[in-house]
Amino acid sequence: MEIHEVSKKIESKLGELTQLSSQLIHKAQDKAQCIADYDKALAKTIIALRNGDSFDIEAYKIQCPPTTIIEKVAKGIIWKKKLDMDMAESQYKILGTQIEIVKAQLNGLQTINRHLSHI
Image 1 (cartoon, helix red, strand yellow):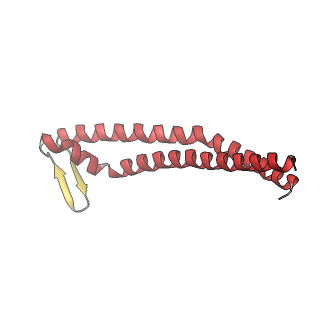
Image 2 (cartoon, helix red, strand yellow):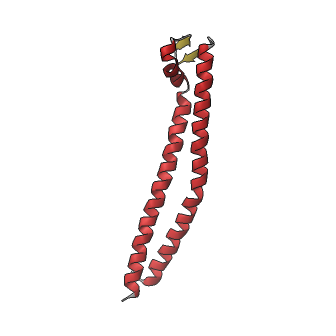
Image 3 (cartoon, one colour):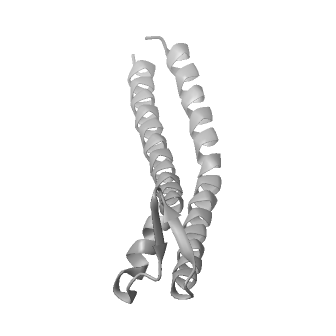
């Protein structure tokens, strides 16, 4: 590997790191919004169940479940919101992992660059 080749790779990794880092705020906002949407949907569904509203889950009609299982039933009704919330959290974590990978690659390239500059 030549010094100018390593230098170009370092610049590329710096650009990649900048681009990934700029996505962090958006992923954090998406994650927070999904959590808020889930909490709101859960509260609304629990209230609706307590008020006697009926819901359909696949082929099953649910109305006036026992108080002890209302929260579990409500979670089953809004399962899609939970899926969205988990996906948003996973995407945020994946982005953090991608940033760490690029940092490690950048550190490796910088080490190679130091060794090549001493030769």
